[in-house]
Figure (cartoon, rainbow, N blue to C red):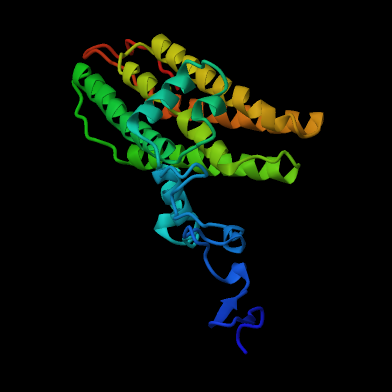
Length: 284
């Protein structure tokens, strides 16, 4: 028989026969219509996007769908760009005017949206401001001027390498020495650390070499202090000698960037017609 736990007892009375079933209660719902105790022990699954409290969370749903995508798909990387304008502006300001650890400002959610667009903005601002400065210099010197698009190419290579290749190298070095770094956080630090070069490039239009040097030194100091302050907790996990070497490498690469920007984009002279001596001493 299919129902092995059920059986029937026959009670014989004088007036009639009565059949009474003693089937196991685990196989049938109770009289009140509730599910039996055995079915209550079955774990209940919630739809995607619902938290432990049963409240729908769209970010949980997006994250769950993203993690299920293969690493070579575009959808996999959508979580790295899940930020709004207010968050990006807050992180940009925190890179110039620090109010604490930058990782606390990011609240455990580093992104690539801000670093990519900040680096791209720096590239075009460098090209535009340097072109304006050189055109002003050519006008005051009464000399012809033509745009040099090689500067744009140089800016692309320099800024993108510093924003993405350099942090990848630092991440690899710290990973090798057991510092347990996070690649996304490293990219976010270097990307947002470029924010200060936007106002520096705009103010460097003025044809005063001493001012430009002061702006470059201020920009290098602010962004360098930002990097060292936030990278030191990671570097300190390695041995003292190793952490010092990596720290010197970080500062050295940062200084090279500042010098490249100064001599490639913030260096120009104004010569008055009829006077062979430049008004502003050569900066290079």
